Amino acid sequence: MIDPLRYPFDASAILLKKKAIKRTLLDTDRSFLEKRVAILGGSTTAEIRDTLELFLLKEGIKPAFYESEYNKFYEDVMFDNPKLLSFKPDIVYIHTTTANLHAFPSVGETLESVEKRVRDEVDKYQAMWNKLSQLFNCAIIQNNFELPPYRPLANSDSWRTYGKTFFIYQLNGEWSRQARERKNFYINDIHYLSALLGLKHWHDRKQWYSYKYALSYDAIPTLAHNIASLIKSIYGKNKKVLVLDLDNTLWGGEIGENGPAGIEIGKETPLAEAHTEFQDYARELRRLGVLLAVCSKNDEGAAKEGFSHPDSVLTLEDFSAFKANWQTKPENLEAIAQELNVGLDSCVFVDDNPAERELVSKQLPSIETPEIGGDVTDYVNILDRSHYFEPLDLSEEDLKRSAFYAENSKRENLQKQFASYNDYLASLEMEAEIGDFSPVYLDRITQLINKTNQFNLTTKRYTYAEVEAMSRQSDRFSCLYGRLKDKFGDNGLVSVIIGRMQEKQMHVDVWLMSCRVLQRNMEQAMFHVLLEEARRRSATELVGSYHKTPKNGMVSDFYQRLGWKYKSTNAAGDSEWRWTVNTDTPLTKSLPITIVRASLQTK
Image 1 (cartoon, rainbow, N blue to C red):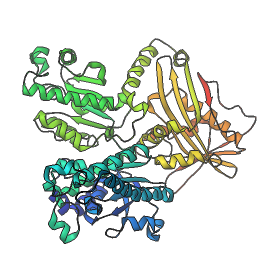
Image 2: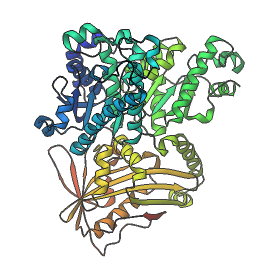
Image 3: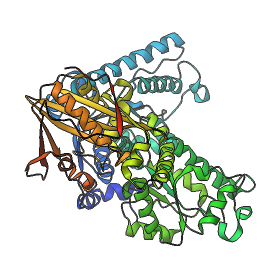
Image 4: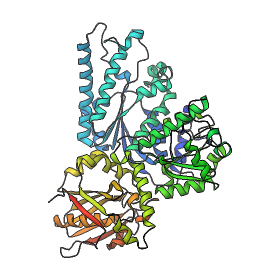
């Protein structure tokens, strides 16, 4: 069965069958992340809302919506609409378009006059964005502007100072600057989307005059998918691993039959050039922090030979996992996910063979298996427009992720040389830097909070603004980050704890750790400092809870292993554990980690 929510979208099928699609999405055995989304529209938004709901449900996000009245986006914010205030959105999406621009320059206006018009427009929106941030501490998604449906100045509209196109270019440049400078502010790039679909298919004047839709019905799924991609990325639901077949996927031909000299890669033929472009795209994703893996039915030696081709863009070092054998693709995909310590739902599998794609889709439905067809010239477009890996805030850890996995391989090789695991840990010469949240780390901390699923006690999700607000309330919150490095390299920021003071108790709202540092006693080091923080604040008790999800079973007995005492289980199934803070009890056992404390609060 064709998934109507998979690119390329069938707009008519989505709009006609949206109720049935919604029922199917809700009738699944999974837990949804519930979020409140306010849509503030400069035009009619009902179909956009309904279609956005479908794409969010597919990503595991169950939205509740507030929708402004037609073209009341500015008034709702600036004049304190009680309904919006009581709704308290987590996300605000401002759906404005070129139809909402009424200050286009007049013929003959000077550049100075046009620049003032641009500033006035920016000031109006800035006031709205600032107030939304103050009121709700929420993430804001703002459309930029598509080109107009007509150009009285024809070609000179793009460069004459009073051209509509020129004016839109200036505004979009200012919107881009705002996105670079503002935290928790994201551009929904309808300028690109309208170009992708073509302005002829984006604008529908009948729809505008009849129903005040600023875009055609056919464009709504593309718009809604783009918004959903931003929201799922804000809450850490991006894919993490791109798993690639080899023959007729990364290169043309069969390496086992023809050897490196007989495969199509490079610039010599149209087919070779198309495969080279696809390898270029995969390497670019890797540079953005996406892990690459190989899953191929092939002899391993022959498969690796393909990367010795002088025109191969990718090298063996670009892959964090490599499975080339004669086992089934689902078996190898499960092994790859286990090796990389990620869930199957973090993987995207690309294979030119439709039979292999169908087998994976049926046996491992949580893995995304895009229908790329058999034409390599479509591969990049389908992957890129599916937004599996939508990057919003790129941290230092993102850019170094592949290197972290390469260093882990060295650690695993070293472990084999030791009979005792404790001796192995001591040999790593580990150093943990643990300190209060720092502005320089807030992006990465927010990312970890929203992406970490396995070693995560509560799986609470917070936006950047919420994390920043807690970090500034040092009297109410103890916010700790942990970095771990050893003789093989720096693992980066890998652990987060947020403790909330409530009278004499410190409640652990967040405790998580990256799986790449499992079983290295980093959690013990974090506990050591958490206890110290509790004592500094004169807390008599630490209270932690475990919220069970399909992915975090590995920490179901975490508090028990630390020695905490079980207290109770609530109606939602969350178990509560407590630790009595005693001034004369040893903090923790001796650790094979040197703890360096960075700017801890003294309150």
